[in-house]
Amino acid sequence: MVVPKISEVLEEKGQISDELDYALMKYLLENRGTGYTPCQPQLVRLEDGSEVIKVNIDNTFVSKDNNTLMGLGIVGKMFIDSKTLNVVYATPKDELEANIEKLKNSGITPQPRPKGKY
Image (cartoon, rainbow, N blue to C red):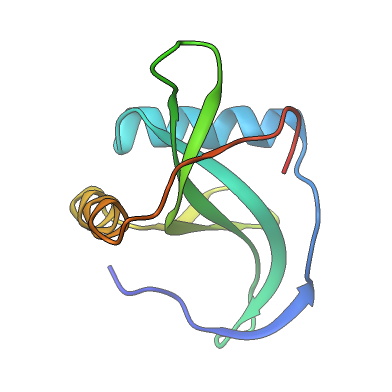
């Protein structure tokens, strides 16, 4: 699957509904496994003229003390059709895993994730 090309950012920052957030989390769990959180939604126009919601995929986990939600960083992205809310593209699992390893090997320190939407 080819990564869609963005021709224009229509809304730099936005929020998604709780229902869409739930659906994206469910999609990631069912299709990519645990440890991924959709974040930082944007409304964009693709080169083909379609408007989609782009969200980054963060590698997320619970800290060793089981008390804090942590994030290693952005490891992929998803594009969701803004009319049907169907996933148009999501970074493949093997690429997500490779990007996690790159971040771990780069020496990046995981950061606590804020409560609520981000």
